[in-house]
Length: 495
Ligand SMILES: *Cc1c(COP(=O)(O)O)cnc(C)c1O
Image (tube, rainbow, N blue to C red; front, side, top):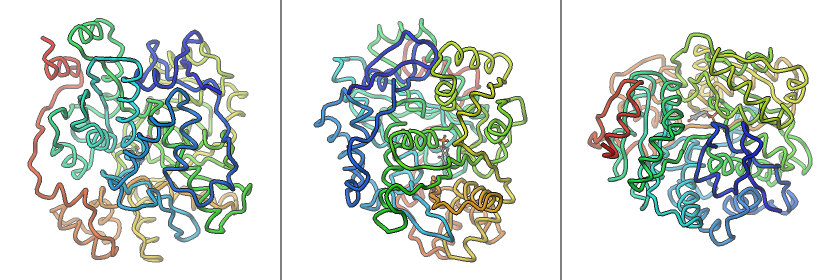
């Protein structure tokens, strides 16, 4: 059955999957959501032993129903190939009572690769389908990992260009170096003087500017988004929760039908929403445990039903989760508001105007699958050190937020359900914070720390890190947070 997409803010909108992928965001500012979540049309048993790519096809074909089998298989084959350093694509590691789903084996060593290695293929296939001749310009705000993964995904892809905005002082040094050394004639990287929310708001404003869109069209350009609001990013993320479940069955850790819990270190709420979709497809997921860092807006929301971004923004050791406006939460709000676009739009308007909204008790009940937790930076560092000392396994700061929340949840509830922790980045991406946690020291040179990390963990330095060790800086543009649109106009030569 065909799945069409509607807007979370306007009940009139209905587009195909490829249109939703190409457009990114609905014109009314809403997010595209599937009209219904399709159920897996094969049994979980039958997926045991299948490859990541095969499972990806079984899941994605249900959501992206206007792509042909050939198109979709082509996208999948080109995304999940030797760019990943393991055939498993997303291996599961059994460490100290939890199963770490390592989502960082792609080209930029963060979980964003799981979706951003396929998005360019989904986008160009969509453009072809719709006979679009315009060059697709990807605009992306990043808290560090999306930017690099999107740059790597789109670099030199014909018919596309990409402009990435990142908060100047809001990313790790390695993240910044990864971005500013990006090759590819169609790539631009801009540091903004502001935080991630500023970058994200700026991009949303540019997308919403109709006059600019008209000017772009005249010049043969069209904007699209690589941010996690794009359905073309969300859908590929559903795959690895199905894959994780099937892998646990294959390993004899779960009997088919037995539930698992998932713990997800959360920022923009895309990754955990994908787990929620996997559950609705028929994967036996019990609790969706949403782990926040000190920017614990989601933890407070799940506890109280009040979403309130009016608080101090904290720069933490898990910068990819330093977010106060979790864009993808809107999809959950919409679902729990009974798919009422008006109700959702009113809440989002309140968020925009006052920085807060409150949901009804009924809506809150519909979110009972979710549990919120959070970890401070001290707790995060301690978990990294404790798990390393106990097992030799070194995890990154984002994963450690989830690990801490997992231990807390288990202690509070005695819930013994088999648990998958989404491991969202390689420790090499956040070497400084990780090594401070493990050894309590802070060498000055990041690459000295990289070599030391390799020594203590026994894990070879990933290619993504070796590549940037001596790479020249290619991008030096900076701008004020209020000048993002001007910068885009300049880059595209629209004046
Ligand atoms: C983006 C990111 C997250 C947050 O994921 P969301 O889908 O935005 O919730 C967590 N960890 C890392 C390493 C990330 O790059």
